[in-house]
Image (cartoon, rainbow, N blue to C red; front, side, top):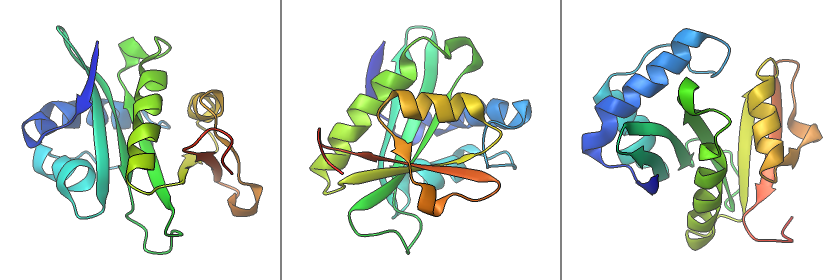
Length: 157
C-alpha cells in the first residue's frame, strides 16, 4: 500500500468509493452521491482543501482522507477531517496510516488541531477517530453528532 496525495485524475474512482459508502447508509453525513468533478471540488481542488490523501494498491484505491477548512467559523488553527475507507479494507489499518500522514501535512500547513464531526449513530467512525488520538469536544456536541478534536503535534492541545 502507498499513501499519496489525490490528483484530479483520481476523482472518478474516489467518487465510486464515497458513493458506495453513501449507499450503505449511516456512515457519512453526505447523503447525495457525487460525480467525479464534484468530488474533486469538495476534496481535492477546492479553495478550502488542504490535503486529500489516498491509500493506493495494485488492486486499486482502498480509501481516502481529506483535510479542509470549508467552514468559515473554524478557528484559524483548526481544520476538518473526513475519512472514507472501502468496506473490504475497514479494520486493516488504512485509516490509521492515512491519519498519521494527514496529521503531518496538517502541521506543515499551520493546522494545530483537527476536528472530526461524526453522526452519533456512526459508532465505528467514533471508535476509529478515538483510536487515532482524537478526544471528545463535549462543548460542541449535539444530539445528532459527536465532535472530536486531535492536536497535530504530540502533546498538543
